[in-house]
Image (cartoon, rainbow over all chains, first blue to last red; front, side, top):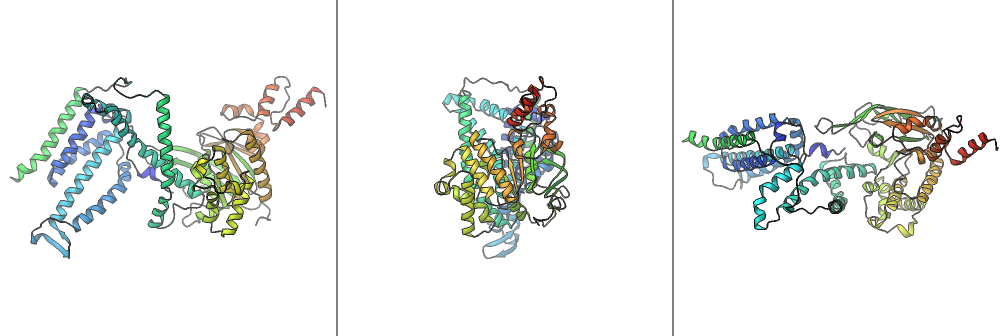
Length: 276
Length: 294
């Protein structure tokens, strides 16, 4: 059977009650931002090797099963491998003649191309891992509160922060709902004689296409229901809305942030210094 | 095959120590079925009852292999459906399921096309398909000429449910499974559907399986109840025998039929009044007998 829920982890929250789960969401968001910047700054294999232990540490503390994360990332990793393959073949940059390993017309494999694709791949995986861990360890309520507080200064400039954050969070929340919906529809259609669990990859892909219209319809219905639900509960958003759970950052939260920043600076700067 | 003594043939559906966990091996795993064993013979009319979360829908899904099944747990006509190479398509053409939410199984925009979906997927001729669509829609009180081209999304909830049932009936499956079929139907719709199911069951020698959290309708449709609770079978037996212990069923949050509820109350007046009464008429007869009026 089609079991998408096992294989898609985007937007899921797995509460293991770990220390990372309990951290202030604002600090977690800031750390994610710092690591996102880091993924662009670091441009050598040594740099990524230096930052790798930090990821291992995060993973060990968060206690989210690695097998679950890997299984849920298969689709993404496959797609990435596909893109990197072409990135190497069509490497457009100038490469010294000696670096070519193979060449045929405009297709080539060069060490420079391999290096660039390797760094690019690591960057994307790094980014993907960091954001995935943020989702897996932060509940939507915390995420909403954290984002609202971080962007609150923008409200002075009349940016509708609450509304923007709400839309963003709803968009994330809809992903797992859609995944469940696709699974439910596929099961129902299977029962009526369209086998989603048989046939080659192309046939299966074409069958998925049949689900698009019902998915869109149910998406609109759900959005409609959500609006009604929010209206009946008098949701108005805006600044005057009070919070049931208040975020509070402790000293240790700030220390962790400093540690991460220091680690990033090290991974960014050290390879250059060593090279020079 | 159909003429052979049913008791001697292997059960049409059999579960042996069936267990099922959703999202097994992930942190979000939830155990739905702990240990369920029963067998259903050809032509039986069985009610699978239990409160919400008891595992009814999971059991139903297993009948047509709509879950990731392990070997040695689910059998159809004596064959393990989880054996590699087992023809699942053929299984699904023999076991028709009407799901709890009709919307999840309607696949086309227009009524006629949706009812024709199953027969077409089974490779029937256009003529035979048309005949079946007409027959199924008519049987459910949706006249073919009038409803054939109506848009499903413009129909009412009750009408959509009927279209969903018609879509499964059109497949002429020997086993018909209905998950909460009466939900969303008005009293008249319920009565008509009940009469239709009883008639079809006789005419086509159907194996009829009805899932419900309420015994009201199921007690008139079925001869046997399998009561589930928290993923286990707690009672399995003939309807009247099961209804003899209404207290136990009420404890499980299963809605009892009206006559049974009345009989329970009247039991305070007549200590020997049986609770296993299926209709008001039966109850009336029992009470009159005790009042010495018959």
